[in-house]
Length: 353
Ligand code: SAH
Image (cartoon, rainbow, N blue to C red):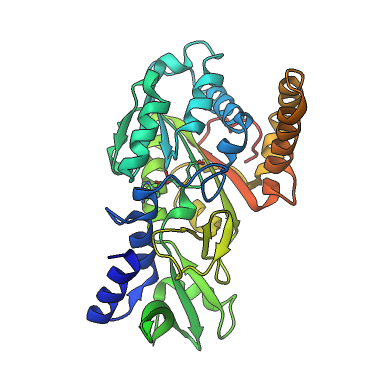
């Protein structure tokens, strides 16, 4: 039985399914979910993330976090956490660059939030020399200074969609029509949580809501406000959601999100307004384009230093990777960065308050 069959049977039995339930089943079904059963990353996978494009991404993120650790008085023991570490490449690059800052790696306890057992096994291999531990919830982050990074984690969290109908909203749901999965709309309902969206939307507009993101970030912000540290978040999206941004990608090609449940990556743009609203315990930076952040941290100088040791195809690939991470028409503008630090603490280099 395929995951599509499972979903069709369930919807036929129980009625239309909320989009967030559909997305989380597709991504994290214990046996047939996308992250639980596949190796999605890399040139031969379905998509390539920034740390998989170039080591420079993780090196600069690591040095930014290490600078913040220096600025906050080099706490002797701290949690170095990552949300959704994929293959563990970003954390490995952070640790390699961070090792240049005396004492930083020695003080770090590596803690990974990862839902997929298959990816936990890959991370265990990548980070074998650093004794990582895994947690199921950010609530399990130890009560100590916490430096945390998340790249393309929040876009993987399930969302709901609502279409405006007068002063009410109809939820977009996944149903079954003619034996196939199909989108439909639920009944119009008043949604007090979206009252503010009546001001900037018109009839028929679609908004997205990621209820899972805020509790995660507010817990992280609480840890950092109480014990010190910082969080550095990268993802794609913009300020305040408008329009359908759910996308399915398989083998680097976009496809219909209902076409191949469990076999395609499903993501949605991140609403940075909602993420920052959950961080009030800390001071946030401005939302900054990834390309601007990496340039401010000196990616061009680092790229030149690495280029000096390369030639031929490796050099061409390295130049393309630098462009891909930073150019406004590639990942430089679509991807955004922000950090949070305790109130009164220095912001991370490359970001402004
Ligand atoms: N940060 C990595 C991987 C991004 S893909 C990179 O940049 O390459 C998203 C990651 O988040 C995967 O590791 C996936 O298994 C994990 N993930 C998705 N939903 C999750 C959830 N609800 N809880 C914990 N981890 C999750």
